[in-house]
Length: 116
Length: 111
Image 1 (cartoon, rainbow over the protein chains, first blue to last red):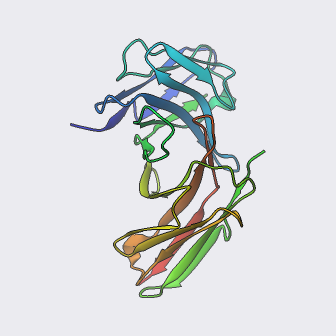
Image 2: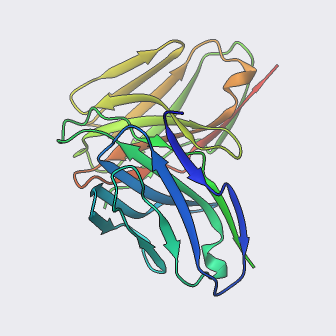
Image 3: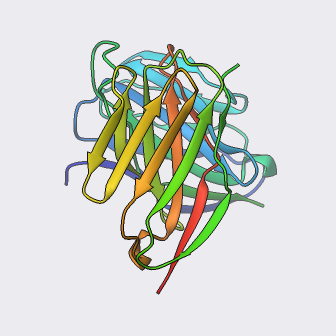
């Protein structure tokens, strides 16, 4: 199916464990993003990527690691999960190679992570 | 620092009413503004994207306007239906591939 898919959709883990959230898009979009959504804070950018092997920090990157070896995949890893990382995580992508501003940001369905 | 505000935070209207959702931003230097819909437990669905050079965009019963000089955008929903009930978010794209999101307006359309 075309689109952007996230897995797992739901995950419960314990403090200190490593967790990886997967994101896969089928459009060959250049840009990919990871956000977290929390009550009272809205959507906050964790990391983004402009192309394969190019990543950069967003607003709240501490405790997270990303990689992008292939254009279509952008996994997010919590190296040692903490309770404060309990959240809903959204992956997003957009196409375009320039700053035309005409490119829609498209989201996955989200991954709900609970850290006990 | 760019800030995006959406007022009201929640809104209830009877079915059939025309309504306007508001989005304000503090810095007019934006590339575009996008409106999203989010249903409970779901991801964000893009509704309309307005480029900085445009004044409005329309899709079906939805019309979004943009006034960069005043830092405002509105989303107009005509003839509202219960299926329109959701949270509506706006987001501005700044010059560094970053999007600043509002905290949303939670809309409930009563049958």
